[in-house]
Length: 222
Image: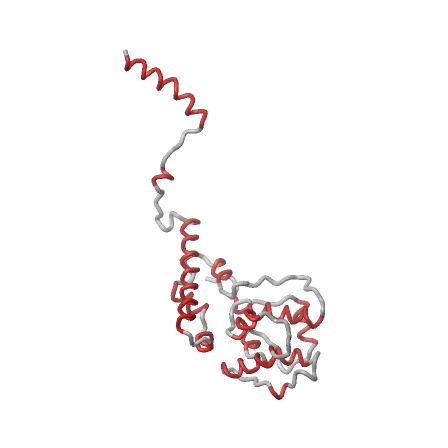
């Protein structure tokens, strides 16, 4: 059975892709991981600011140390990129790299993107999960694995912070399950509450029943 497109293959607006192709980069980025270490980002900026971005000082490696070093050099250039977008790109979060590239395109070309690419602003796979049938959606353990990468845990050694991240993912998963139960109560065998079962008469019917009530009261008095 084929489901909706995975967020790992999410694309970019056509004008942004054409712009990337025009830069004649050392390799053309095809997936989010290609932006993760910051090397290709530095190379993009080097086409516009060759005196500030020297590619020999950047490491095109996949280690977390290489990623943090490259991005640290980029951030020292006082480029106005959002920190959470950079972190999301480093850890290959859904939608982060796409949003980053669009921001860089706007900064360097001073052009507005005509076709705004829809991305997950919270950098989770929620949008992808919402597109799937309920039977195919992730469990709590899979949600944690999909939304909390190993590099993210290594980069932030604080146990309490990581625990909070896990709890936030679990909370989001629980909320999604609640929403599913509301959308399809029969599938989850959700029974109506006492308040939902109670029938309340409309005002017109309630007034019509009052004479009968008064008549019964008079007969009882006799």
